[in-house]
Structures are given as C-alpha cells and as structure tokens.
Image 1 (cartoon, rainbow, N blue to C red):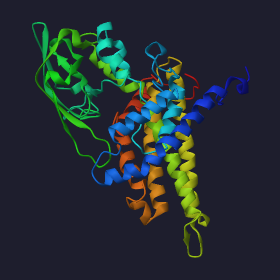
Image 2 (image 1 turned 60 degrees about the horizontal axis):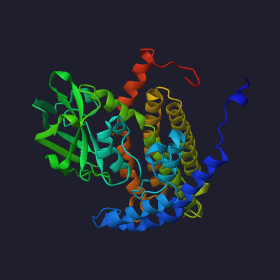
Image 3 (image 1 turned 180 degrees about the vertical axis):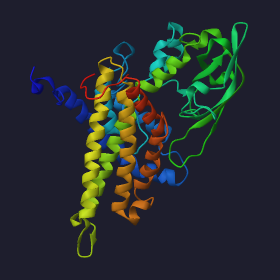
Image 4 (image 1 turned 45 degrees about the vertical axis):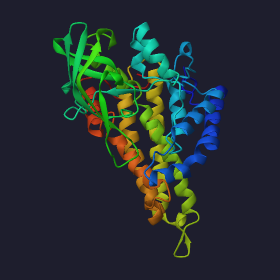
Length: 390
C-alpha cells in the first residue's frame, strides 16, 4: 500500500464540526469571562464562581457536549481519545478554569454495580466530586513507596496516613485512596468524606489548588474496595497512564493562544522607529515557538491514537507529556519576553499562564521521571526506535 494511502491526517466532516463548535463555544461563552477571572484572582477569590461554572456546563450540555470520553451507555458522547485531545486543545486556549462535565475517573468503571450506583453515575451527573490520592509527603514520583496503612478490623478496614498535593481534595466528597492493606499490598479504597478524613488547602505559586488529606482511624467497609484487594497499584497506573496525553493537549491550546498574542503585539509595538516584528530576535522566538507547538501537537495526537487503537500508549504518552511540558514553558517565557514589562504585569494573563504552566513539568510524573521511563523502555527493549505505528 502506498504511504500516501496509508496515512491521512485530515479530520472527517463530523470531527471538524465538533472542533469548530467547541471553539465557538469557548470563544462566545468562556473567553468573555477572562477579565472577571483575573479580577477575582487578584482580589484573592476563586477565578470562577461555582454557580457560573454550573451555568456554563448546563449550556454545554444543551449543545451536546457532555461526557466527551464517557461511554454512551452512561450518557456520554464517547468521542474517543483523539477528539478528546483536540477538544482539550480548544479548551486550553482560555485560562478560565473550565472543563466540560459528564465525566468520571476511568478507574471508577472498575467498580461493582453497587459502587457504580453510589460513585460513578453520580459523578458523571455532577452530583458528586471525587479525587485521586496516591501522592504522600515521602512518596511522590515513587508511588510504590507509599506509607498509608489499611488494617483489617472485622468487616472493616481502618486507614491511617497522609496524602499531599491532591487535586480537587478540598472540594471532593469522596476519595479514591491508595493504602497498604497488610500483607496483601497496595489497595484502592472508596472513602466518603463523612467517614472521617479531612483536608487542608496547600498554597501554590499558580492557580492549582491542591490539598493535603489526613486519615486518622478512618473506618471503611470491605465493600468499598475498588477492584481487587492488593491490586491497587495496577489501578493507580491505569489512572495515571490513561489521560497523560491530555496534559500536553491543553498546553498546546494555551501555547497557540499566547503565541498569537505575541504576534499581534509584535506587529503594533514600536521600538526605535519600527515595529518589533521586524527584528530578527523577535522573529526567531515566534518561529521557534511555532515549530515546537506543531511538534508537540503531533506527538500528543499520536499518543491519543495509540490509546484509541487499544495499544500500550505509555511510552508515547511519556514522550508527549515531557515534550509538551517543556514546550509550553519555553513558549510562555518567549511570549512574556516579547511583551516586555507589560507581560510581567497582572493586567495581562501571561504571567498567570507562566505560573500555571510551570506545574506541567512536575505533576503526574516529573520531567525527570518521564526521561527515566523513556530511557528504561528503550534500554530494556520495551520500545524500539524507528518503527511507525507500533
């Protein structure tokens, strides 16, 4: 089969329509909220009021955007990994903390029928909020080194320990917590907040609002084990690996938006009698940024394609995540430099993006861990060089 016939990078008419509809929604409904978000954050309030977010999601649901990657049997659109990545790129074009509703953590689908009724379906419907808790003060990237313990006491398990940097931990009403269950090994428990765990916010340099969670003699019934006893680490890796390509996807949208801001500014900002767009130093920053964004885009879509094909996408996702995180930080730094002093002020969102995107090189696997993973896969033969589509 000729190469030209084997590879097609175009979207179907339906996929283009979905992309364009999402872009229109973001531009008309979400971007107008940007000044309000900046103002709220400058005054120490959450960027987006919960009622505003609820209204936005209601509008999105009426437009058909609900559960982008949720199976149709649960009321989702089931658009698949590639379209999910493309939609994430569109959402990333705004810094408003918005995401389409109707989704749930992928590992919740591993629950029993009763667990699905109590946790999965209410989460999809937006009635409940979850969080994923594996990171500890002494176990970040080294997830196998967790110290939280679960001790059996009759028909219950008693959990003691602390988790840290938990996304959504302050807002969640239940947690998927990973603990060492005696000799059985790491196990995942579904733990409602009213069972006794507490949370405290952790201040950060960006708008990410993680929490520390404390479990002190928290009693959990046996039926709240998610998956199998002692099989929690596999679930954790499934959670981490499934959506890793979505991190660079959203960063690509942010980088494209910022690069366009830099181009527009460079065409009107004058220095020494001419616009700065005429200077080679500025042109090279613009060109390098475009090249890096395009490279990150195709690495990300390739990882998403592997997920959609049912392939083991962990290696490709690590490459995409590492590349995308570094790219976004380089682009935002150049964009701020092009804007000069104005880029450093809080009047523009560039400094906000600068702080926010720095997180990408740390969470869900640091740059160093991604490099370690990629190198080990190559050294051990789990991944091979020079092969397309494998």
